[in-house]
Structure formats: C-alpha cells, structure tokens
Picture 1 (cartoon, rainbow, N blue to C red):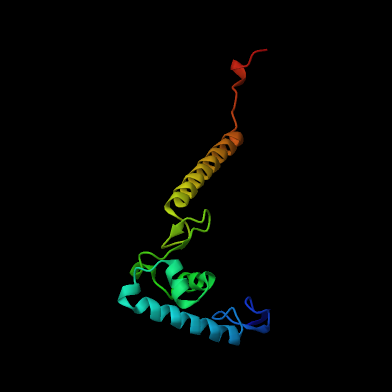
Picture 2 (cartoon, one colour; picture 1 turned 60 degrees about the vertical axis):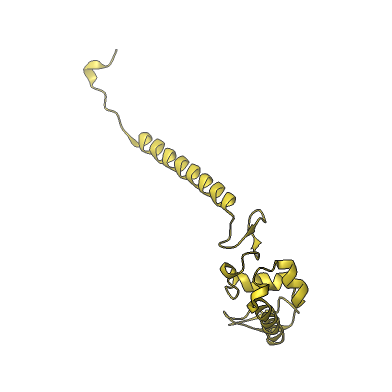
Length: 139
C-alpha cells in the first residue's frame, strides 16, 4: 500500500493492488460498470459497437476500455466491441498486439536472436588458438 494521487480526480488516497483510484472515483466507476454491464446483458445489445455503448450508457470510452483490459467485460461475447492494439492502434479483441504487429515483433525477435547467435560464434572463433608447427614455418 502506498499514498498516491487519484488518476481521475487528483485526490490523495491509499493505493492498493486492487484499486488505482480513490474511493469516490471507484464508486463512480462501479456505477458506470453496472450501466455498461446492464446494457450489454440485453440480447439485442450484444452486437453493439463501442460508439453505441458509449451513446446508450453515457460512459466514456476510456473507462469501458479499462473494464475490457481488466477482464470485467469479455469481448468473446460481444463481436463488435474491440480495443486498440498497443503498437499501431488497430482494433483487436484479445491480447495487446494485433496480428500484424505480433508478426512484425516475432520477425524482429528472430532477427535479433540470429544476430546474437552470429555474435557468439564470432566471439568463440576469436577465442580459438591455432598452433603452428615450427617445421612448417617459413624463415
């Protein structure tokens, strides 16, 4: 536990691993979550887009994204809801990176590992000692 400023209102509060906002803002967030949750529970709203959820509930997108990222809203049940890829901002429904950014990241990682392997091989070669037989040496 530590003292921190609330990220929403700036008030000083005791931050815990569970809460990143003060008690007042936490209660407001819980009320907002209930609005969003009640809206999405209705069968006719399961295909709602982010814009439709925001319009119907009045809850800001940033807060809805927080609920999604914390796992409180599971997107598998809501095919038209998404959140932005951490790298490029493309809409995604799971993880932190879209498929393209994952592929790019894997390629860069493979290139880095290949370069590291080549560096180790060069270092090993530099450690190798060659003995020259005196009778083959030119004088």
